[in-house]
Image 1 (cartoon, rainbow, N blue to C red):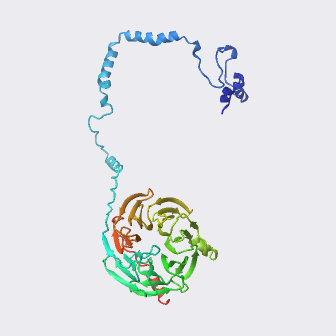
Image 2 (cartoon, rainbow, N blue to C red):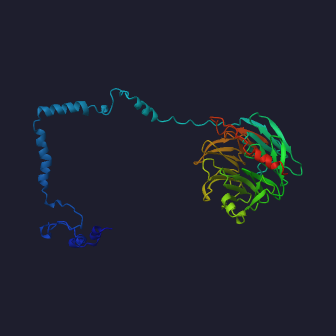
Image 3 (tube, rainbow, N blue to C red):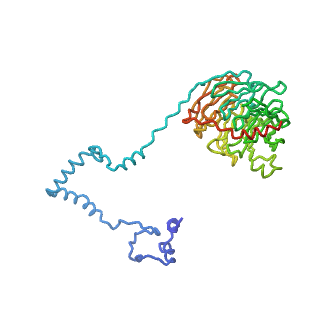
Length: 467
């Protein structure tokens, strides 16, 4: 509160209120106290006019009688004509104010036309049509109804792989043909996980016996079998260039360099139960792992490489927000540090994470078990597949998480989803033993050619002498 306000509340004298100005050496001219009106009140540094010296009767006469005298005075002819013209043209025709009689002339400058057209509002983008039924349905007999497994993947060569019991099938999306790659021995089966290498030619298969097989699908040839990596079944696989990361029921996560004989180069130990979800980020710098222990871990390559001994068990983030198994994992294609995760039946939530800080950005209760998640590569959308009770696919708008569509047709939980290389078609596999294809992410404007097999030579030379 300033000095003037304090003088009002404390009731100090007028001279005391002016003392700070005197001390500052800039005292303004003020009349002496003897010349002031005795009835004037002191309000510190505020000036409030006092009308006690005004003659109110004279003021009232000047405001009323003087106006009547002016009205009675004869107006000059020129003023009367101006008043009449003003009333006729303007005051009685107010609707014409700021209105054109005709359209304005077209601009003569050719550059002006270009400027106008360039600033015209762009037409609103039409909402994409989302078919409510699958465009194709295939039988998938003997599909294992197990939430913790990962039995389907769509490779960069546009070939879908799906494990049905002990047999691995390949469906070529370009021709629509189906072929059988391998039927494993009963003692090793069933197949528990599958993942395409980045080249779209080599396929990794995890088995219930804890073995991992590496296949060349172009020649249907078994190239290598990794043994002793895990103590029990291998339910999750993820590639990061030449590194094949495997997750087992023993809770271990192992990085395997397929180019060398001693392939196990790194081990992450953070889960106490089965690892059911593994996904590398697009940059290949971070690995997300989800387990049946309701835990989500973020592992960073730089931490492991800088601390080769301590980094074996060191995670970047240990996230405990989910209340059920964490299987559904999806890295965002347009924001490298954004991860979406889904929880099992007693959790039912989709959560979004900043993997740099470990912060949970949002959590959405979907009302049912979240089995898998896929991002739209062309739009800010997320697709989730669910279990009990609706067994549906739900398309969400990100980040508002408004439901855009719900796709129904499966009669049991939708355990697995895979995305075509162009990012538009989604395949869903359900415990109802059907495989359905949905045109949920639209049609690409320009068809993208399948990437070349850049690692083919590396794989061939690596597996040729290693068994």
